Image (tube, rainbow, N blue to C red; front, side):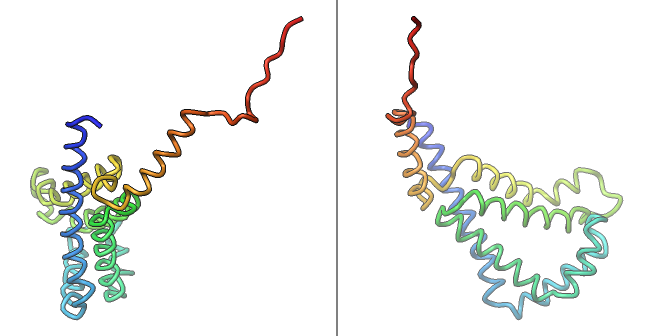
Length: 184
């Protein structure tokens, strides 16, 4: 591995670990202090239904989430905890990143019109910057095998790399050696 590639992988690992700690802290609060979070979650969802949510997403919030706020508040906390642990440990980073990206898409659908109905386009983008940045970082982690450096994903990828080297060195088994026909 080239020096700059190694530095890039280490930088991705630091970013993955830092983001994992942030998700872990947020999820920890929501899962382990549920009474204080449930009411604020319900208030937040009611605010989203009154305006910032995308039109097609409002019925889901109104008819499903508001009817079961404790379930969804717990689900949000467990999702953040799951993503945080996965990123922190570098374990199954691709599936963890995909779960995090879906979670962020839900947040973006719920909060897209936060600046108000007549705000300039830049205000909508500005209100979503943290969601966009986190979404794209998770995409980078998934694509770049961010769990390979300083993570448990290194064990899987190391073993996979060894099996790939074997197949590249000897792509055919001795019993699969092609038979050549001689022309007579």
